[in-house]
Image 1 (tube, chains in turn yellow, red):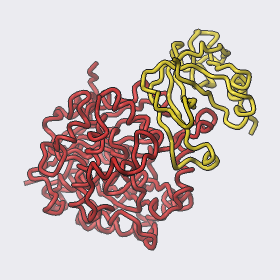
Image 2: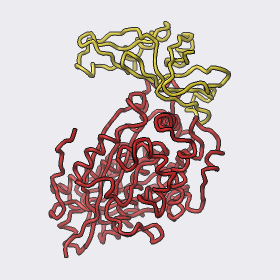
Image 3: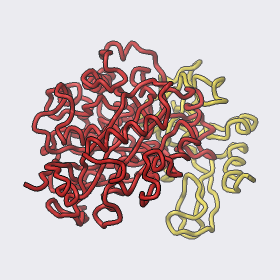
Image 4: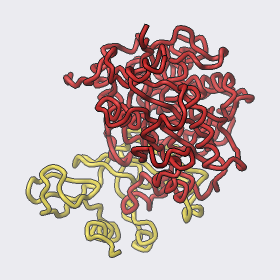
Amino acid sequence: MKTPVIVSDFRAGLAGGDLLIQNCHDCGKPNMWPRYACPHCQSDNLGWVKSSGKAVLHSFCVLRQGAPEGFEGDLPYAIGVVKLPEGVQLLVRLEATGENDWSAYGCDDEVEFVAVDPGEIERRPCATFRRVG
Amino acid sequence: MTENWQLHVDAGQENDPVFVGVGEIPTGKFPDRSFIEGLTSVAVMALRDAGMVPRDIDTILLIPCLHSGADQADLVFSRMAEELGIHGSCKSSFMVHSGGSTSDNAVRAAHGLIATGHAKNVLVLQCERWGSADLNEMITMLSKNGIPGEWELPTGIQFNAIGAMIMRRYMHASGSTAEELASVCVTLRKWANLNENAMFYTKPLTVEQILASRMVADPLHSFECPPMADGACAFVMTSAGVAKKRGISSGVRVAGSGGCVSHYCLSQESDQAVLGWPLAAERAWNQSGWGPKDADIGEIYDSYAAVTAIALEGIGVAEKGEGARWFAAGHGDPGGKLPMNTNGGLLSAGHTGVGGGTALLVEGIRQLLHRAPAKRQVEGCERAIIGGTGGSYMDAQILLLERTKLGA
């Protein structure tokens, strides 16, 4: 199956260094994850806005074992849920602050979007955030 | 917001659906026990417990298994009607599925079928072989199910990561310590030590052992992860009228239920330390007319300690932020003020996939029928809170069950 446009557009944004949020051209509301019809007004007149890149970390964990198939080489890695001021939230990878060290992170910390190498986005098409300060 | 959303059947009505029998075989690792053998065993046990034979059953509801697509297809395509010899007379056989909350929804389905007359006697069957399945295969399966592949799979999320994120948010919101979270597992183990069918029947567990176990997904330790197990259980529901005619003097009825589907993937949950429990509880209490203080036991989904602590708060058994400390104080222990997960729960009886919630439900029915072994039977058990949740804790489902007298 061809990758759906909402998916390829979102990933192209990441590869270009942008975190895109789906935006409804009719009601103006943001949607995340991107949807095929606006959950607020059911319009399919949907586009994108660039996120400010700012967020608050709702929660996270550091996975040390039991990686899914294909992720064994990534261990350990941290994933978390971030809430954006635009009113949407998403699951992201968190950048270590030292070698395999995420001990500085805490719930409700300010975090920011980090652009990563397009090759890495090709391999792992997901957003990465890091701690501010 | 209080909704006027009532059940249309009351205690004393002929069509009031009641639970009249349960069956269960030991949970753990049983590689030589076949899937169909497990299903057949619990079917026969539940029917005998209900004073019935297979011919009495007109409707079979199947709880799904996760270990094998082919075995799940056997459930879907009515194999159990044939195995029990009721093909030809059986009216309907189908699967209900909402992951870990399936048992709650299966009860709603059976309840509606019986109350409206679509079914007379319903047999609900569950069997899982997670303990004998390939562990890596199951981890990978669980990293794909309940997770949006196009959006979240690339992060490397898997099931313990979901449990760990909820745990961390809960610890942050409540100020609970690692010791207090570990005490939830210890309470469950005390109950498992009273349940010969539990995977960890003979193994005690301490907070110290848990905190010394390896870190799997900070802040989650390996001894706080649910052990994948093989297991099977079953129950029988009928109407009060039919039960009376069969000479059954007491059963268990549904006083009310409530639910809330709060998200599909955990990233879209607005507060991981709350989940859907408050709305589910409001709906359930409103339907039942009783409250958390009226319950004699709780059987609430416990694939991770924080999940149960959060549920207890939403349901109103514990004060906001006090769920884990409620366990640490021993309130859910044998002899505690509200015995909780009296079979040992998923964490200590064993996680049988979709069946974990079914086993808790079956234990609740068993306690209310006063048929639990003496060492763990809760005296004067009249009312139970059953709680379930599926997927990435996508929903909160509550069944409020009560013992009921049938006939003279």
